[in-house]
Image 1 (cartoon, rainbow, N blue to C red):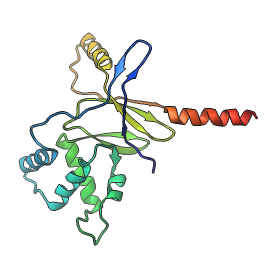
Image 2 (cartoon, rainbow, N blue to C red):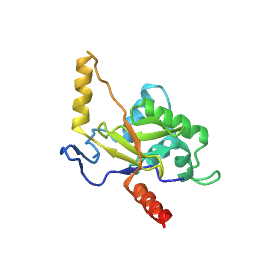
Image 3 (cartoon, helix red, strand yellow):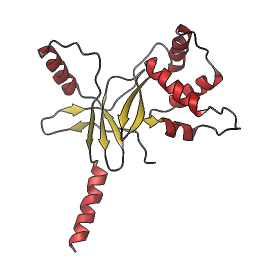
Image 4 (cartoon, rainbow, N blue to C red):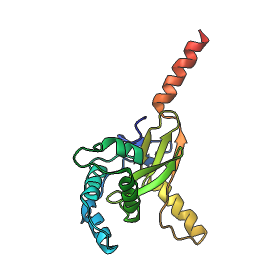
Length: 182
C-alpha cells in the first residue's frame, strides 16, 4: 500500500505571495493518553492495556493512516501486546469521539488524522501515488470566515481535501510522454 501521510516540508508560495505553512503541533496541558483516559472515565469505560497500547501506537508518530495500516503495524495473535481487529476499530471510533483523531473518507477508506494537539489544517491529495500533504493557510481561513459571516453562519470546523497530482507524479508522466514521441 502506498504511503498515505506526509507533511509539507517547506513553505509554499504562489505568484500572489499566499503562504501555506507546515502544520506544527500545539502545546497541550494533557498528553493524548491522559486525554483519552479522561474520556473513558467520563463514559464509565475501562482503560485496558489494549486501549493504552493502541493510543501509544497512534500517537508515536504523526501520520495519516487507515485501520488496516494500523493493524499491519501491530503485533500478531500470540505475540505480546496483541490487539484484536474489533478492538482497533472500536478504539479508533472512541478516539474520534474523544476529539483525539479526525476521520474522513478517501478512496473509499476511512483515514485518520491527529486532531488533539494539532491546529486546524487542510490537505492536498495526489490521486496517483496517494500521497497526502498537510498545510495551513490563513488566507483560506479568512475566506471561510468571510463566507460564513456573509451567510450568518457560525463555523465549528472544516475539512478540505484538494485532489490532484503531485509534482513527482507530474514529472514522471511528462517523461513518459516525451519518450512516447520518439
